[in-house]
Image 1 (spheres, one colour):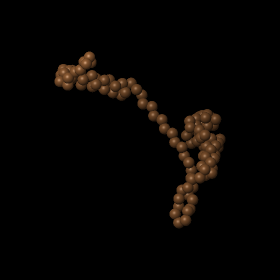
Image 2: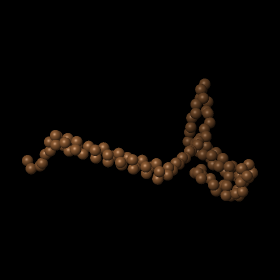
Image 3: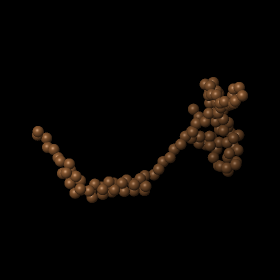
Image 4: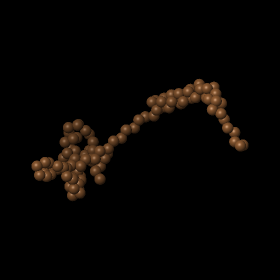
Length: 117
């Protein structure tokens, strides 16, 4: 047999002699990683939401919410209608006056970060 083999006792002796390094190096690496993530990396958070408006359909004696494809299409059209109403000049003018904003209605309407598709 030409391959060199190492006995378990020799392996344990090497581990015992280098135990300080085996403990210290991971601790140093963890400390550096924590410091970088805590003090140099700025957290960035994002979120999104999607709303579907449904109606209750009476089924026998119990009320159940049943959603059909036609209802989803109708609900999406309603959401688009709500979006159009929110961007209307009458609504934007009320927002401008209530919040004392100096921006034009067009500038406020363009601030819609998440348009409805």
